Image (cartoon, rainbow, N blue to C red; front, side, top):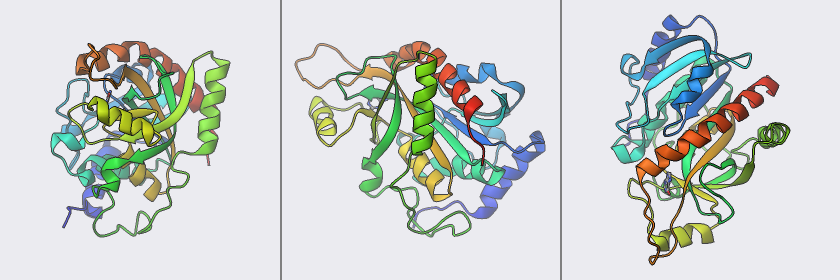
Length: 283
Ligand code: HPA
């Protein structure tokens, strides 16, 4: 039986965080590889190391800081997960998604999820942004769904709907903000793979064939848990590399390439997220 985080575990984490922070965060943000600089724009900042929060998984990957940053951004109270743990690090799907459930219990109703991803769509280039219209959770479909095991009825239903996993209104808002600020923004389908090895060229061609525009090793489990708990989700991929689809190619994919592209992605993403936050209709 999978280890499902008990409500008591979630509440223990919530209790510690509430001791640091007097207000209720409205929006949660998860930052992808190398995107930590987005938290520089936060005011009234409270930083809590994951190591100090009960049951929070700590990422072992460079580019992932491992801190919950709370404060104010574009007039909204935000809770930012700076760094995430991944399935490939050896954590269970339930462990890597625990922070999202904790955000929900803290009061977060809207989640902005970011990631670094490889381009499958040939129109995309490193440094580009893609708003996620939908995802294919290959890992989840193969059995590793974070909701596997007893359902936490207090958070959501046994069989949550995923037909609007990425909120259409938030996608439209992101598109409008991008247009107004002249930030180039693609739109597409994110495919979640387990990693940590990058894809073979045959796998890249397969992922394109099934409808993927970008590929990465995160996000879909977090979004599944967020939707289960009724959160609205906006997803944005920063394209860090072009996935290599031909064995004859002389290029290779590396984590350094991913971190390098983040330097171009972060300023654009920061501006996009600030713009979205500023115009976000609150329920
Ligand atoms: N494949 C999978 N995950 C990734 C990639 C990629 O090419 N780039 C960044 N994360």
